[in-house]
Length: 476
Image (tube, rainbow, N blue to C red; front, side, top):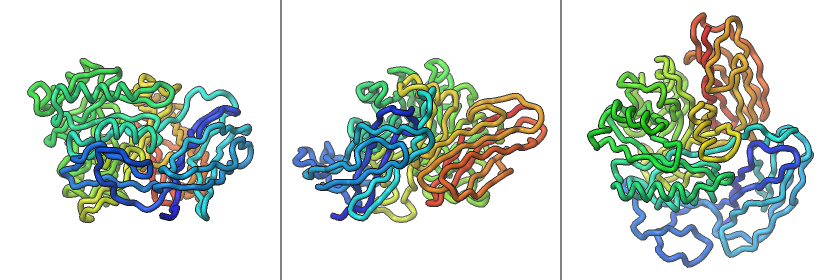
């Protein structure tokens, strides 16, 4: 099998001289991996159950070369200090974390990987002159397992998130209604077993699955929380869910809101204290706005989308949602899904997964939860762009009181050039640029509507992938 490309992940923020690892996978053709109880070799992923089947008809697919023997070349531009080559010895899947890399110059940097005529760049690395006060981390906070309607065991999915999706944060949100009390205790234990502060953070979480008013993911701040099933009488409606969330300090996140079958009825209820984020993009596609409003990735499966259920509709109702992307993956591959390549009819194929960027002081469960709670987050279509967005000096997710013109600052970087960046105010694009560059610092002003306004940034890359900042709310 020939090398087709690379999956490369570098840390988004480091200090000058700070050593870090470059994580990468060498890719080949996408192929289906059969279930197998007994690991026999290191050239294919091993599935832990012969009955690892999904009612959705999903199969586990892999795109890493079965093996690779030889060297790859590494180059990092000005200030790069690290290996110029890395060698794979063969006999196993070529997945590596290459240590001992650092930069001696501040600014944005990229590491280029070359092998067998193929070349790719890492995500941008922001090198800071001083030790970073906060860093940009990456998480997928929405996934399912064989216990509901997906594939792979919880341990396998956590392992993939850490070791192949190269995520900093992961949480399993399986459908609570599919789990017994004993199984829930097991899910909690698996989340806690995989938590490694400083390396890999996890959250205890579940999905509350109510088709009448819309699904919510539930995230607990600590190492335990009760199972909340929409089929249990205390939690059958939103009031019961909100009551439990307030009691346990849980964060609630509605998702795939625009979908006709599974979407969110915004007028059915809202708890502004506990519902602080919304999932704008996942494998179901984008719920930001309707297709007729310019959404290039509307939800098409499960009877498509319904007007009035988009993220913009909730924001226009006054709901103060931060914005995240997530996977909602069912194919066992958080952080690097292959959902759109399943052997299914086009009408049932899902989209590229989403991912969440979050700004935090450290990689711990507490810091990740705090970043989500304070809306210091943004969503992308599984691309690790650098993004900071401020209005009147207030960081995304904040509320600020200001009279007069609003100063807007958007800083972004990506390995693929940005073709369109828009400032959205109250659901409408009020300013836009077409930079055609990989690094952007855009400062502008807006006069506002005369009342309370929300602003967020919408970014489109040359390859069609998108990102959305969380809003800033400005009160006059």
